[in-house]
Amino acid sequence: MNRFKPLAGLGVIAFAGVILSACTVVVEEGTERPRPPRPQICTQEYAPVCARRGERQRTFPNACFARADGFEPVYRGECRQQSIRPPRPDRPQFCTREYAPVCARRGNRLRTFGNACEAEAADYRILGRGEC
Image (tube, rainbow, N blue to C red):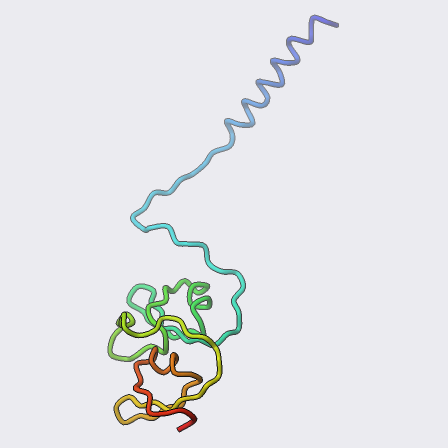
């Protein structure tokens, strides 16, 4: 019985070699850059963003929803019809959610914002504290 032990070891090695050689890995190389993983769960926070995928733009409730749908956020706020433009560097990029309402104006349009930061981020000029 001792004469089969070396053969059994070789049989196990040969069997493992056959199994491993049957496994193949296919790597597709293309011109597209790898996409970051998409979020699986998003909060229900409403902080609208305009996002882009290719030439298509769309408004999402927040950046997480945009990324989950394969879009890349471009700027805060709803999408404008004329063009996609990045936010100006002199405007705030992130605001707190504190409630200290202000009345603000852009052109002939008056609007009440939750706080001054949100008004400035939307490119409105603050007229005063409180609702319009």
